[in-house]
Length: 487
Ligand code: BG6
Image 1 (cartoon, rainbow, N blue to C red):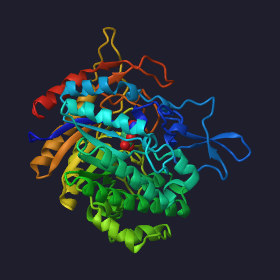
Image 2: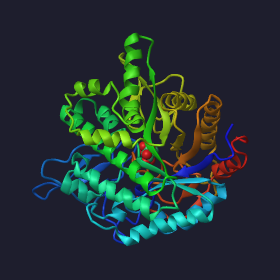
Image 3: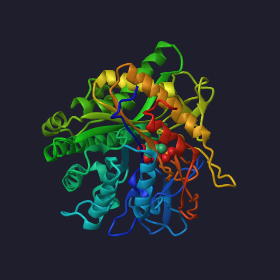
Image 4: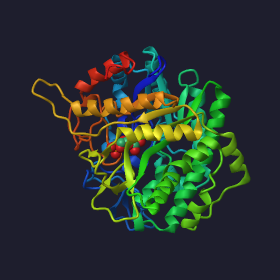
């Protein structure tokens, strides 16, 4: 059963929703040099090489030596306009309030507060924008849940400091986080330090043989700096306001062994360790797990970790565990008949599950499994801060949108959350992903829609950006009203 205080709501991220990428002093982020893609075509990051020739490289892969990020004339960058939340936040928050949201998860664009990332003082217009958003939430009694970093390091820091490869990023992030905590004290209580922090390494696993030891060395090192930055933020957040509840945010995948071959059972355990527990353990327990040494040895990784870093990790444990959950994934040492993609994962197709048009497994039981497994491990309050179905929506002649598939998806996941609570899990909130349609992070598409609210914009950026309620809007309203009993 869901308690009276359960935090029902929805989630978005700055780079996928705000748009206004160069408005009011905002600096560019990596997402602003990332093109649109599709289920078949990857998103590209665009650049000019050292001789001035334009080029593009698949998102996640390194730029050629000497190249610099660039916006190219013949490319389309869907994040530039997002869904124009920057100018329409009042209308959007009113729509969320109409569903009865108790919580709204959003992120702060780093380069809106610090256009380059290394300035001493923030951009006042940026600071003001988020203050207005939080005040708007307050008007309706909606608690903001704020992600400090959601995939959008300022481009200037990427180009001039090498991004998270550079230890100095810890200090820049710390300044950014301190500004957030102090400026929004009293308006925001729930915070997440890094979105899906475990993706750095999961993404390399996804590239298979293309990623060599040097890339793993870099990936694990970036993660270490992010862990320290997160731990510093937790300490600053607690000093600023002891009421702050600060969480980690993990890309949650439930791994299953493909067969009962002991090799598969072990591989499955190691997938949990590498993909899920490695980050969760550092952020929840304040120290590296015992299996970390094995993971590093696999790729000859040798990390820059100081004694002071270890102290910071110890003093910067998060208050709650949060995660995104979309699917489970099958791992096996045996050759799969058929493979499927997923959120930063790929694996064998599970014959017991249905798949979305983007190949993501529909597995509500996997959510229960994940919740129970994680609560048992950390015994901290948990929130599911992303969950949803990316699907094509059709507007009927009368303007309605009958998204029963989305309702089914959420219903089944909510049922399993209730089962996990009955099993003792301290689950305190649920913010569905893309409660309003937004730009897909993975493919850059608009047509991969998650929302209860439709946004009139297509994959080429055409449309009025008008908002429209889908059937799921009315359904979710009822779910919240009835505290999850009317599904
Ligand atoms: C998570 C991210 O990986 O999944 C979100 O935190 C993202 O930013 C979401 O949008 C869904 O993925 P996609 O690729 O369908 O947008």
